[in-house]
Amino acid sequence: MRLRLPHMIAAIVILTIMISSCGSSRSELVPGRFAGFTLSEYMDISTSTSLGGKVLDLRLDDTALFLQKEFAKGTRRFSVYVAKFESVSQSTGFWYTLIRDISSELRAFVSAIPWVYGEFSGEIDEGYIKTWFFGKWFYLFLGSTKEEVNSAVDAFKEFERSLVRSVES
Image (cartoon, rainbow, N blue to C red; front, top):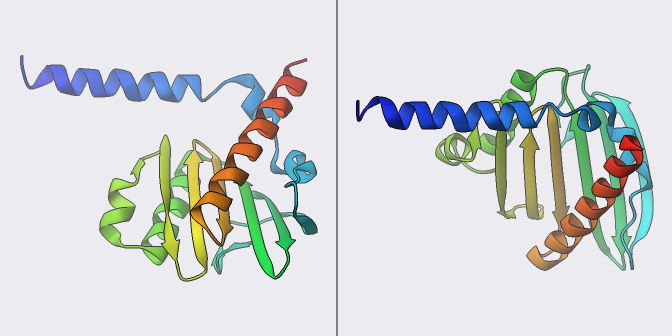
């Protein structure tokens, strides 16, 4: 009985997360809706939406809806990537490949609950990164410092909440 209880609790937690991530408002959003996201004190250099694309030289599946935004502040650049995959297995597979490329096999393994959620942040060659996936959705923020990236993530999440409210209306 002791061995079964932890497995049952884990299964219930995973099932609850998967069911809650299937809400109607998230399925109505597409990455292109985030094109209006701006960062105060930064110049919006470029915004592109496409099917497929590249994130840190790693190719996305050609069926993934993709948004890439580039900002600048002085000589510093800041990048935002948002993708929505057709399936959670595609987002999870992309996640593990990306984290293995920028970190290690072990960090990739422990950074996610397969098909549900993953998160990674830290210094890489290109700067400071914060990235996560949630179901079919993938997000990546790349800037110079941890503070800069965390501030942008907070602003983005507020923008996302306002988008969700507008879709629900």
